[in-house]
Image 1 (cartoon, one colour):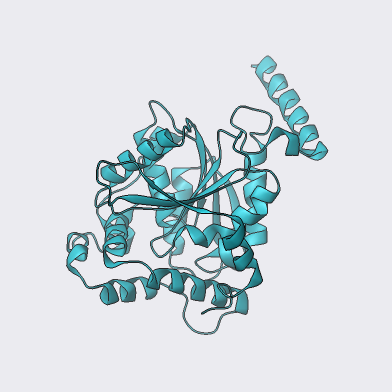
Image 2: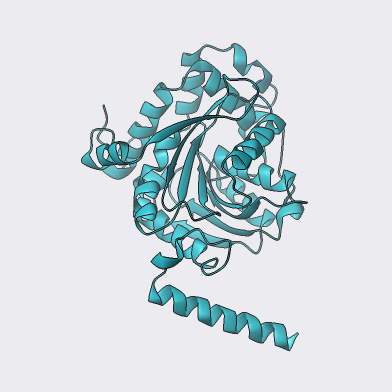
Length: 311
């Protein structure tokens, strides 16, 4: 067992936040695993979508910290879906089941790509109000696996896990980053072959985001300056897709900064979500909004009003 899974912090999370299993498809084998923490009166929560190797547990530091501040946070683990359209349909059904018309998305790597594709697919009747993309990408061809993706379902689990772990940071790293890698490796080891194969298929089958369809969505891009699975060119391509996005850079953090640099990532999430405080798209309980937040909301409304009058 790794340092994080054995920690008191993780133990407190598992004992205080209950895990739920939800089926929304006709196929009972397609089970969404989720944690739903924070006030239920919030109807536009933050929904966290994990990377290929992750389970819903990888966001435990976001769940604990942000729900404690009054935010509603939902972390998900996907069922087995073999196509993007199938995943999009399943995610839409899940939101309907949870009675959520609009959400904010925090998407990590594959989770960020899926969040973009869902926003793109629902742009005529938007379900995504904003997105935070962490070490994400907009085009699957960067992984150079589009021709082999259709064969992943045939491959044994050990071969698939070896493919994923090849992208993890190797060699000497600082303890927090090393612990985050160990934690994700443990999550990866717990994934059955079908789940891992389906995620890799979604991650690598030939597809790209059409950003022109989601330019009206507020987006923050979080990335790291140190070694990660994504090249600088992939990051720059994402910036080009969303030239008006806010950018949050971390000096270090590796592939999983929401684990290794959770305090910084959580702060960036709060800054992103603060723009929606006081609206029906707020992800926080109104009673938990601080005086500083209220003053920021007041100033924003005054600024927006002044800009509208000048046009």
